[in-house]
Amino acid sequence: MRYPRTFHPVGLPRRRESGSRATQRLWRSPAVVYSLLMLVFWLFGGVILGTILHILHILIEVLELGLEHLLEALFHVEGHTAQMYTAWVGFMIFMMLAACIWCFARRAFRARFCSWGEALRAFRSWALAHWGTLTPPALVLAFSALLL
Image (cartoon, rainbow, N blue to C red; front, side, top):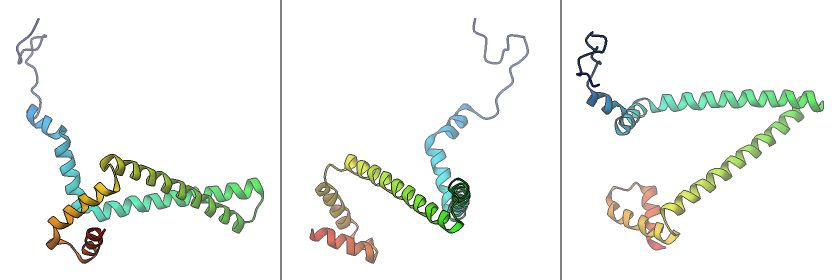
């Protein structure tokens, strides 16, 4: 049995929701959320990015300190030796992350462009279309791409 919109089965009128459904749908729209995030990052991007990187750096330092103490306790090495081992382990982790990012970027590039030739042709056409608005470093890249 369907009741009218304002009728509640107990007999009391149903409480109306604040805001219309269109407004609620608007705020759930990915375009609106993305636009607001871009506005926030445009206004406060330096502060937000700096804070995120600072927190990340503190976390890495805490992990390094824990690894150094663990190496000193397990293998009975001196502090300087534990720091060297920690540095090499950190370098190894960094290189593994760099290799993963490189593979991901290469796969994404190949999915977007079938070959380097197609990418070069796309860049050449973009450079010729925006020739007057390019900065000097971009002009050097565009000129070298046109020569290839």
